[in-house]
Image (cartoon, rainbow, N blue to C red; front, top):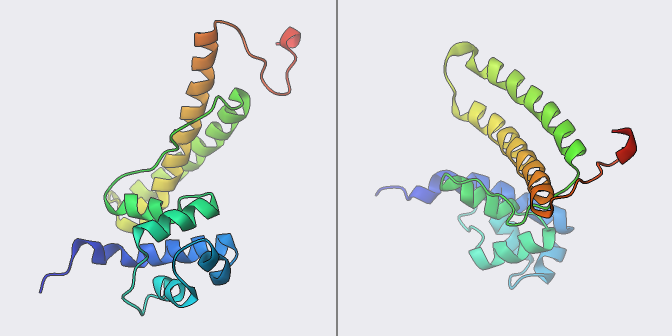
Length: 165
């Protein structure tokens, strides 16, 4: 029998489920916000059990956690990255500061990864979230710049007086 495509991603889904359950306050809290009980949540996060969290339960749990722990793992299994639907204008200065730090970390990681001339799975898993975070920071910075363009008026950056630069 051929193993289904999803089998390779079950451990990541179980880890994501465990993180989401912990984030909402444990198995009892998770059971309150979904259609399944304690036993099912225990099975969904136990690598010794075959049960995997159903999509509707994952949606409820991630919604309660206010973070797509499980849905991110599902998207990753299909080769996709998740980005928020709405990226607000944020604080341009803060975003650029965080982007500079993230870029330095990405470059240091990339140099180390490329030392042997091969990017293996562990290395890809290490750098992918760093790249995603940098991409999100750039999207927020771009949204800020775009709002200046659309409104045709300057915006004050946090911590700076418009008269002082």
